[in-house]
Image (cartoon, rainbow, N blue to C red):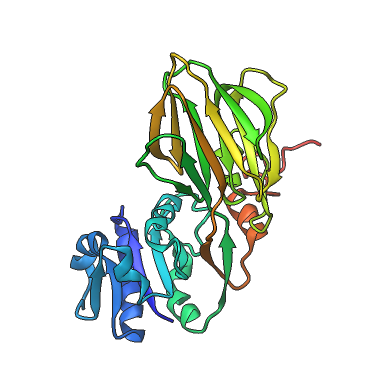
Length: 299
């Protein structure tokens, strides 16, 4: 199983020691490994041996020599791997060195046995949906998202109106702070914070989640992942900005955007004995009583 490594600059001494330990384990089992050039420059002083390390900076350098890309960081770091793996068979295994790390598979405590688990193939691969965007105007911004497409008013405090069509049928004009179109993966990100439902990753759907709607009858709507969504920004004095997974795409006062499921997936590694419900119990603390309230609750 060929692995490569992507990551961000380690933030503290504990993470530096964990990274040093991970590279030491890798050096014992692999004759060579690819590491993202900027990350290698940030950690090479920690490593005892670097002769087995080669670096990459482009998707093409990675594609022909990698089965699993280790992502060292948080969920944001994992989303950054999309630029390198979309349209390939490479699977991403997230190692959480951030805070919540909902998308990541392994935590700091899992690093010790991680390389052996990969070598023994003690994992499964989940195929996550990707959202793609097309525009009625020239746009050089990002055209894909693993979490969500986000439409927000450029002027804080201003309401925007967005006309929404599904399969060319008019749905409604959403008025408020904004609108999210989320994948099942993105249901536990911004959409959840905006009141959207949690959706299991294998669900074949997309979710439209209003952000602080002006009309309180607007509620999240789940649609089929085969549906095609058109969002029309009517001509207005207040501009609207669009983001894909937090990356700014445009700011405009009018235009049409087509959103639909992409023809490719994002492959994520899940270790044995871990699943989606494991994640929401442990990372969203479902069913857990806060320690400072334990023993003092009356139901």
